[in-house]
Length: 290
Length: 290
Figure 1: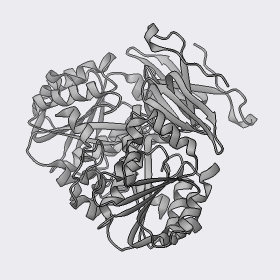
Figure 2: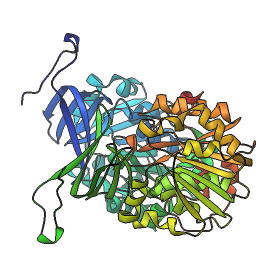
Figure 3: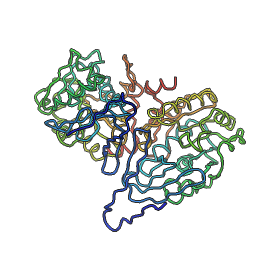
Figure 4: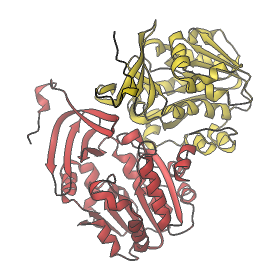
C-alpha cells in the first residue's frame, strides 16, 4: 500500500488528509494529518503511525488510537503511578503490552524499582516506538528494563510469586488482547504477585464500553478480594474519559495511601491529590460495577 | 434550507448522515444522525437540533455542540453544585446563558434556593429546549424560576448586591458571548453578588483552549481575590475535558466545604467527593494559570 509523504518545507500543504477512528459505530474522532510515517501489517495487527496536526505523532493499531505525543501522559502516568505509590515497596514490575514504552518510562521514575519486565506480543510495536516515539520509548533503555517479545498470558502463568506490581496495558478486548480480560488470566496474575502485590489494568470507557468495563471489573473481583476502579481523562480515547481497575492482595485503601505519599519526580498529570481524587466514582459509574 | 427527516419506523435507515464539529482546525468529533429536528438562523446565531445515534438529541449553536441528552449531566451538575454547596446559604441565583435549562434543573434541587433568574439572550434557545429537550428544560417550570430574555451583561450591571450565586453558562467567546469573558463583566458580577457570594463560569478546555482558559482565569482574578479552577469530563466538548472557574467574595476553600457537605438529592455525576476531587489540578493545568 502506498501512503503519502509530503515535505513540510515546501509551504502549507494543500491536500487535506484526515484520519477517522470510529470509536463506536456511531461516533468518530477525526484528525488532520500531514503524513503517514508507517503503515504495515504485522504478524498480529495493522500498525500505522500518522503525523497529525493536533496530536503530534499518533500510533494506531487495527484502526484504534493507542497513543499520541499530545496526550499520552494522561494514560501512562495513570497506569503506572497509582499502583506503584499504593504499594509499600514495589521492586519487581511486570508490564503486559504497552510496547511503545510509555508505562515503562513512568515506572522507572520510582527509585524502589529494581526490575521491569515488558512482555509485548508484537515486536513491531516496540520497534515503532523506538523509531518514531523517542519521548515515549525512552525508558526502555533503562538498565533495569528487560523487553520480552512474547505472550503475556503464558509469561504470567509461569511466574508464580515473581512480581510486586503487574500492569496490563492491553489494547481493546478484540484480537490478541481478548485473553487479557478473562478471569483465568486475572487469577494467574494474582498467583504471579508476591504478598501485598497489585494488579492494574486499563478497563475502557465508562460511557462507550460499559459492558466491557462491567465484565472486566467483575472478573478482577473474582480474582482479587480488594478491587478498586479509578478514572481519568484521555482525550484521544473513546469518550475522552477512561477507567482503570486495581486488584490488591491486601486490604489497604489505595486512594488513602496514594494521597498521603508525595511524588518525588516531575509529572504532567499525576499528583498525590489527583491520584486520590481518581478513586471518587460518580453514581453512574458505581451503578455499572455494583 | 431543506433538511432531511427520515422516519425510523420504516426499518434501518440506509443513508448515512454525519455531523462533524471541527473542535479545532485540525480535529473533529463526528457523529451519526437519524434526522435533523430543527435548523434555523435566529437573531443571534445558527441553531440546529439533531437526533444522533450515540448521544440522543444534540443542540448545536453556530456549529458547536452545546449539549446532548447523553452527556449533559456532567456539565450541568458541575456548573451548579460546586458553587451552590460552597455557599453557606444560597437563596438568590442568577444564570446567564444556559437557555436550554440544564443548569436551572440542577439549581432548583437545592432547597435553600428562593429565586432563580435565567437571563438568555436568544429566546429561540429557550423555545428549542422546551420543545425538544424536556428532560433538560424541566426545571424551567419550577415556580421559583423566572426566565428573562435579554442581555446578561446589562442585567448584571443593574443588579447591585442582588445575588448569592451567579452562574455564567456561556457559549465559546465568539459572537454574543465575547463580553462574558471580559474583566469589566466579572467586576460587574462581583458587585451584583451579596457578601459571601460566588461566581462560577465555564472556562473551556485546558487542552484545546489554553489561551482562553488562561485569559478567563486571569480576568476573574482581577475581579475576585479568591479564584479557584476545577475540572471534569464532558465527552462531547472539545478534548472531553473541561474547566470551570469560581470567583468567591470570601476567603473560604470551596473544595473543603463541598467535600464535607452531603448531597441530599440524586445526581448522575456529582458527589461531595467528586466535587472536592475536581479542584485537584494537574501540573500542566497549574502551569496554565500560574
